[in-house]
Image (cartoon, rainbow, N blue to C red; front, top):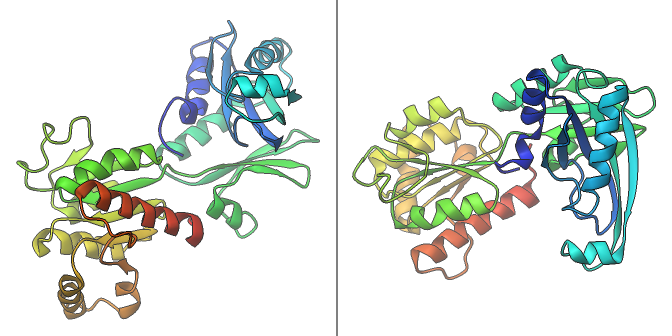
Amino acid sequence: MGSGEHERVPEIALGWHRAGRGAALATVIETWGSAPRPVGSQLVVSGTGEMMGSVSGGCVEGAVTEEACAALGDGRPRMLTFGVSDEDAFAVGLACGGTIRVLVEPVGSAMPEALLADLAAARAERRPVAYVVDLETWARRLVAPDAELAERFRADRSGVEEGRFVAIHNPPLRLVVVGAVHIAQALLPMARACGYDPVLIDPREAFGSSARFPGEAISHDWPDEAMAALGLDARTAVVTLTHDAKIDDPAILSALGAEVFYLGCLGSTRTHAKRVERLRATGVAEAAIARIHAPVGADIGARSPAEIAVSIMAEITEVLRRGGVS
């Protein structure tokens, strides 16, 4: 998931609880029909009825808030079921109604503060983790990716199975763009709209300036140094755009040495052939070279920088959704 208030709900809940304001977490655990928000969506409610996040887009938030305040009063979790009527569903932009189940857990009683703190720490460190709740005994635990849950982590899919709720907390998707060129100016906001945390790398400060890329995270280190500092992982995509081997090649080698789910490199077929020769000369294996998407982007006949950015995001999306990312 991308960044934003909704995705920071566990951290907000922990902060409210520690500040003495009280916090109850409400989580969508199952949906049927056209539910307004997907499984795993969360809302946090304070002891005074303040709320952050969303479990339904507005149509049942009031009822959930009341139950959350009651849960803070008695310290017990609750399982709520709501049928969203056609009329309410239309009001939140849906064509028809649906049903959702919401788990409400007061922090500090039903949900131990230490467990929530461990979850927040894992999220801050970009460590994938699952929050598992037994819906009969209310036992809770955090689980690292294992064989049993591997498919859920790959699909980024939370849900109920065998009497337990499994909430997958994968690190946010991240796009590392090497080269502060015109394509990057279109690609970064496009990536953000698709739920990625974009990072721009270019040691040429005149290119990678805040004037040309307002509000963007920019590194002027050499790509290998910048990527080492970022820590590449399986939720990261990398795109190189400079056409300059001195800048692109260190980035490519760093990406090939990590578990990034996508590596795309700008350049013609001829340019890529020369790139492959250089990589082979440094001892890069053929299997690693085959991971490179080049020329970068889906073949949609793109010409302008914005169209090329569209093609790049299209190809990244295809790899992400059809290739399976953990």
